[in-house]
Image 1 (cartoon, helix red, strand yellow):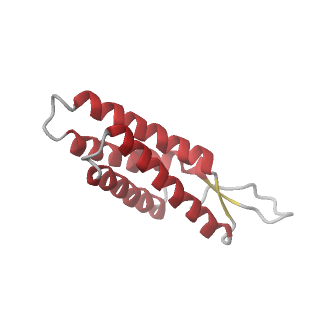
Image 2 (cartoon, helix red, strand yellow; image 1 turned 120 degrees about the horizontal axis):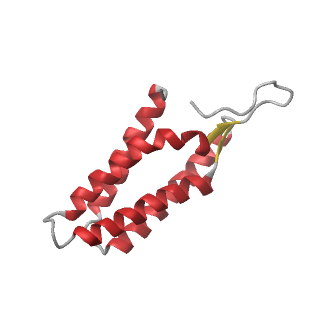
Length: 128
């Protein structure tokens, strides 16, 4: 079971990415996807700089790649259902937010790890 702070982080992250997707609903889906990935990448780079002093490694490549894959799927789904659903961006934003909330804690150990002090017997553990 994921720890409570981790669940809260991904709950907030899911709400933010879903809201960001919906706010940009007037743009083409590919532009929306690119904008979302770029903003997310910048935010994660800032987070990495902040957590460096707390001995937490942020693995940007898998983190950004997984979000880019989610956003790409969201863009494709939005384009596919645009003609058959009144507000496709709303449904896609909800799905994207739910995907981040539910899948984020599963991959968290691949994205964030604690640096272990030299000489310590413990290996790097997932950021709690």
